[in-house]
Amino acid sequence: MRKVLTYGTFDLLHVGHINLFRRAKALGDILVVGLSTDGFNKIKNKESYHSYEDRKIILESIKYIDEVIPEYSWEQKINDVKEHNIDVFVMGSDWEGHFDFLKDYCEVIYLPRTEGISTTVIKTDLSGG
Image 1 (cartoon, rainbow, N blue to C red):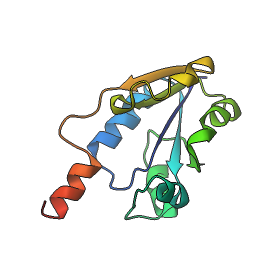
Image 2: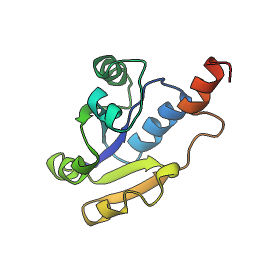
Image 3: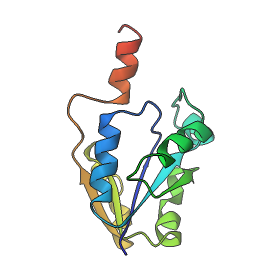
């Protein structure tokens, strides 16, 4: 049983997120998603439209996702990999190299992002910018 882990805020859900979940799930049997808490988003200077609880409910309804866990800090990743018996860690290619320290604990894969879509672009488009 291969377990895959990815992280994110996943606030304004879009096709790029779904592509990440679909492709991550294809790498194993179980997909675990670490979801940034509202408190962690504040630390990262990110503002979410939806609360952590609402984002968690949304993610739990996606067929590719088997489990959602809270992400409280940058430092918890090694512990999460160990605690959840993760075999593969997946992030978008925009994070290339940032999580290579996890290679001592599991396989690390950076997947190409979906072209032309991002939460930042959506927010800019909605604000008329």
